[in-house]
Amino acid sequence: MRRVRYEHSGGPEVLFLEDVPVPEPGPGELLVRTEAAGVTLPVVRKVRERGRAPVPLGGEVAGEVTATGPDVTGYRPGDRVTGLVFGHGYAEFALLHTSMASPVPRQASAVTAVALVRSGLVALGALRAARPAAGESALVTGAASGVGHLAVQLARIQGASRVTAAVSDPAKGDFLRGLGADAVVPYGAPSWGEPVDYVLDAVGGELLKPAVGALAPGGRLVAYSSGGGTIDAYDLLVGSRAVVGFQMARVAREEPATYRAWRDELWDLYLTGRLEPVVHGEFALEDAAHAHAVIEARANRGKVVLVP
Image (cartoon, rainbow, N blue to C red; front, side, top):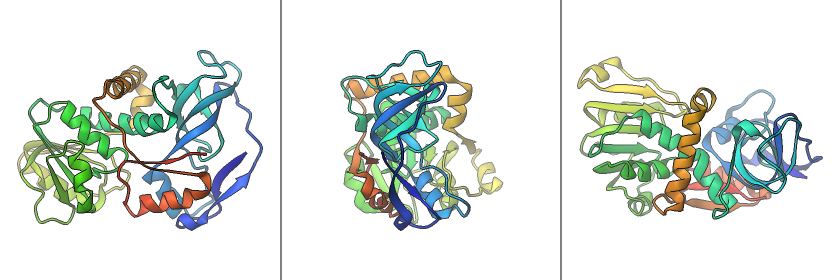
């Protein structure tokens, strides 16, 4: 089979295709013929920044089960599934543990599953961490990303009276207004508009300070970015603002019932036409470097997907 890997840190140019044997599923694992694999900023950063030996390019995949390992129950060859793989995901076949797997409804494509489930879980989880009340206002950073464009829609679905989208490029404005954003502001703007009741921050770093500054008194910021950053405690003291961190992995590990309920909610919203996962582009495995370049340039509008 073909898969993508890299030998050393660097830009998209370090990615290359190799031919390797199809892996054998171990205990609790499904062998999935990959029909779609998501490309995410954390994986792109891993390739760019990792100084030691490279690790597999994992992430969300979707496709058809072709074999099952020992002790597998609930799945069989021919089932269509999606889930998060920690081994090689940029590949024609991937090993998916049943604890991270879920069925794909017959009405949905593998590309839709990859665009919806993992990114949607992060967006919905971050929104729930904000504890929004109906009629409150929201601001979403990284709003055109695979997670952000779903967060904009979910905030509206959950009853936000006003949704502001913060982006790196104001040219993304029409895209986001089409998904329900009332206003679109570039990160470098002197003001992000009227103060909001909660911020869902997917960027971190230098954006944390203006994100806190965008909060109304009593507002909450949910930080779910891997971008780091620091916040001045005095900025929280003034106006009694609050910050909470959110990590999807903790929910998946410690609250499996909540994880499943959120996943079911996302599929219901999609199948009833209330939530639209948008795919920026579908790239072949040999074009993985191009897919990474799109993410690095922050040029995507929605999810970037590899289609083996």
